[in-house]
Image (cartoon, rainbow, N blue to C red; front, side, top):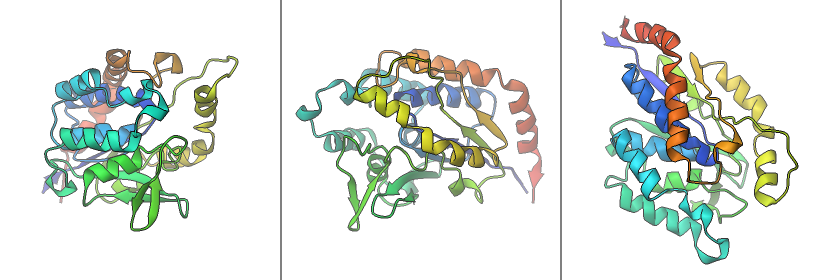
Length: 260
């Protein structure tokens, strides 16, 4: 007889995904550390550090000091984004195989040749992270067995499907910032407006199978595509999740009910 397993879905959303570090911290404190993870884009990056056994304090330091997203402040022509990211992850992860991670991890990307989702759960973690966080407008796609793999604006924005048979209780984190009405100018702002539109229907259906959805109240003004507000984003995720204490305690009771 064993306690029920907790599955956690970490969504993408550029640097706003940093909010999920605070969510993980709150879940730990509330006794709901996940037993299995899935993630995409920024959720895949944070999920990989967590699954590898990095303490949340160290993950915070990595994002504050190194910043995984620091390349977004540099001229596009001056750096090989794909190579720069892979080098950084190779330095960060001493263990680079899924099987060596402390928590089972599933990473979602997209096969550009057929537009279908690809789920990585074995092999080279770094290659999977790069594939999941490859933004097709600016990156060359990652190649795997003659296929072009990339996130392409995250066709699988909320990868809950890998966890459906691997956990008893599923918690989903959905980072969906509120947009203030404003005149949209510049390439980044236009891309950001266009980014989530095709995803809402699919995400809504996937959210319905979760036992709890954590959707912190953030806006684009909190700092998408910047690194200056790392701690603010973490605090938003932490405080919001702590405010769900009643719902989480109910799930904790279910978790502690033993199953055969």
